[in-house]
Image (cartoon, one colour):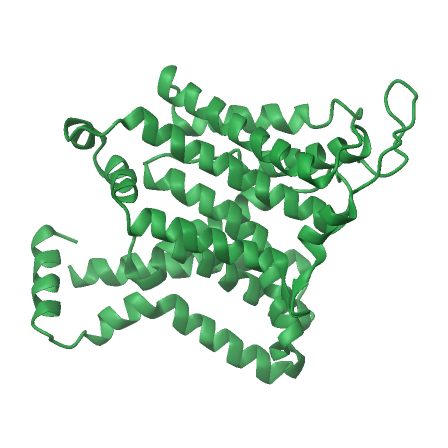
Length: 344
């Protein structure tokens, strides 16, 4: 869309002129599709609209939404964090190892794992900012490094109570019940705690990115790094902040998974990267913003969760899920960019 078109839209809004149907569809496409899905699935399977099932959907997408928020922050600065899935998976193993092998409690484990995520984000930032490695290559290297590193302490085995360590000894620790509450407890017996964490993360990051000077600088860095630097912003610090936040959010996602399953599963986190990226990109279509935004990412994660849950309840084959997620992503982006392009 050209600058002239944007100015005309702003003038029209100020003048109180009604929004065209095409513009309304562009802004509301994801919401309209979500409403259609809810109606169709509720009609085909009445149990779908049950409050317990809806809470189950939100709980299932909470980790994806949190990881997607981290990806969104890095997209805002013009980067891309490919390591979030590996950080989350490593955090699952780290949390379980800390309690079962090192015999730590929840108050020691959670800060330790969050610090691990921050350290990974700092390492990514060092590669990108100091060594000038492109974002994709730096975070891809970190992804492979962590995917292998998480298997070394246990010789490739999952971590559970009574784990036999590589030196032949048996781990004597156990998972702290208070830690399990992070993934299994609920507010008023209805709203799962991971859903509350997801909403808190979304709200805090929304305020940070959309309502503060720091947020404007993050987007300015992604839009025009040279101009932002000339304006006096410290680009290095902004990038470090973005990747540290992404790493910590990925670790938070790993903590939720570990608390939910109660063990360190080596197969955890396999699809988290692609799901988080999909949620972030679908978020571009929310309200027609056509830019990374945390609100859109959260709604994108919920959209995919509703779609997959509904298909599962209708006994759709599991092997069609990735195809459907891809089709939804293509459709959402086509609606947003295609309509905007035709309008311009």
